Image 1: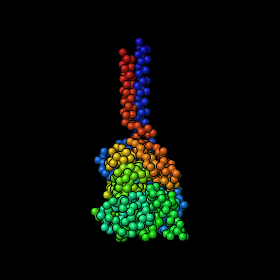
Image 2: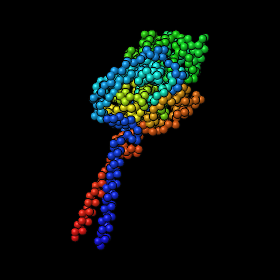
Image 3: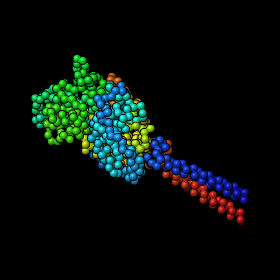
Image 4: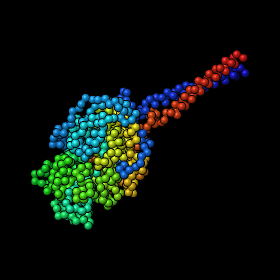
Length: 606
């Protein structure tokens, strides 16, 4: 009997001892996960700094508005290494002041003080109204960042970025086109930063209703194919409207503007015969182009030749100014430039044109109409997108596009990375809520989280998004299905397909310059356009109407591998239950073993 009791005691003691040991192991594993939430995502670490990737699995509850949009369009690259601006050094930004230490949490208690350095940027005038507003916002408390920006053009931005004469650049396209700068040799990423429609600003005295244009009349007017406002083709777009017998003055921008590239894409895609006639006429002039701008009949670039009888400028501000002061003038600008000059008010003779879309409706470059158009864009592996100009829906406005912030990654100073990530965190959250006030659509939930996550993963010194910023995310995206049905607000929690944040690239953004079909996937359906235009894919012109070269995209939610409150390394599991189980087993082993030993002692004393 005593032998049996002794064996039972030894058996139970071993059970409790092993249970306690297992509890210790489980607790250690859980505590390790809690202490290293970014292990699965390999997020950059900086001493004394907490970097928390965004939880995209639970979008914030937010009342949708007509300005909460969609997915994006970006670009890739290749070129001949030649400067695209007549004087790139003329736009060099200011020198950096002494780095400062931000002692105030950035809008929430989650952020810690960090050392930041001033950054100088240059590039897109199309994105300038947004960049200027946001950099002014973050120059004040609680951010206290120094983000200098010189508005010139996208080509100048890419050129200076490649040559490292600027810290960052903003461009409406990537390294694409026939006469482009060589991509950087250092690691960098594209971060979508704005979404906007290219507005056709016009000055037609006596016009009693807002001008309507089709892709045919718009492309023909801007290339000199239609020379008078009372043209019968324009009349067909404006039934019942009296058009003046007035010469058209197309105002072009001959610098290396991203808007030129997108406009050429649009005309090549929608009206190839009109564009081919213009290109052949331009290039067959005796002695070549009189203004030095050579264009292709089939591949867009960033230069738009001056048109006979029109005006030619070097920047968007001058284009808008010349339109405002010249009767009969028309040109392409970002919407805010027209607004600043009073061209989006109640006077239809000085306004921006409505443009006919693939559904036969005339749309304006409003935030919701831009969002509707860009719902059909398809994201590529490097974060860039293929635009689709033929999305169906009454509120689709084209041409619409995106601008991108180009930032270095590996090897960049952490103080600069802290400034960049704090700016991006603001611009893609609180800043996107402001975007419709100055002529843009907000990017929508997918791209807002994509951009923040990409910078968090790839930029050294990245700082955590704050509570205020996290709650400012858009509630969802407009999908092609919703757009086709005429819906103007996104369904909260529904997002378009987005690729995971890409690793830094070093000039491998692609060499796309032709047009091709594209497929746009969403979490609720697939929208396929008849045609699409490539900003960063190597595609064949004969692929028109099919699926683009980069159409087989991974339908990965950009935040899945970054899911939220501390994650279990490599699994995404929640360590709290594991911790509780470990503590329970540890306690069971400790107290159980003591009880067995006490029983054994008591038994020995009998």
